[in-house]
Amino acid sequence: MKSLAISEKYGLPRHVAHQAYYSLAGREYEWELMPLAIDQKVGTIVWSPLGGGRLTGKIRRDQPPPAGSRASVNAETSQSGNNESLYRTVEVMDEIVQETGKTHSQIALNWLLQRPTITTIVFGARNEAQLRENLGAVGWNLTSEQVAKLDAASF
Image 1 (tube, rainbow, N blue to C red):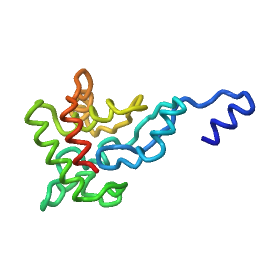
Image 2 (tube, rainbow, N blue to C red):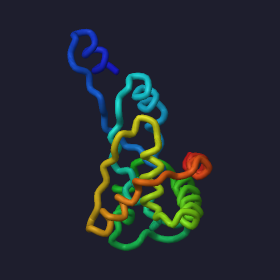
Image 3 (cartoon, one colour):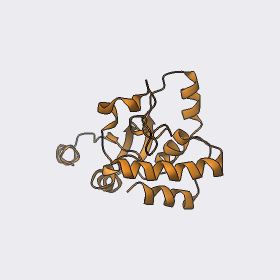
Image 4 (cartoon, one colour):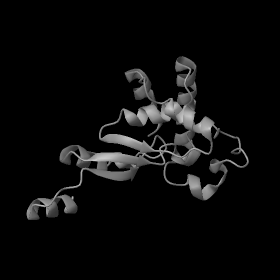
């Protein structure tokens, strides 16, 4: 907001986008930055949209993360959120996977792309298969009922 105010005060170009962490595994962005972005018409570029790999369906209640996965590295998966919320979210995602035939990653990315202010997402892929899977998040939309279930589970 300070940057936008200085731009306005001195007649400078204002920034039109910012980068933020936001996912079904960490929704703190909605508390202050999303309302600011909506009010000031600033787009958001989301990083770590799969919550450090926690939203790929590999993390399960009462099961250790797969060896060698990003999710098995504690520092990479500790951005925000708590385990119970994550487990609830993945369980709802399981239902939506059955309904849509989409993957957990595609569901998580599609949910983000439907959120206010989100203009693009930055995701990593270890190989072509992951890239193709993630690209499958576009060209369709979750239903409002599915979005509502994900919203409720992820808080």
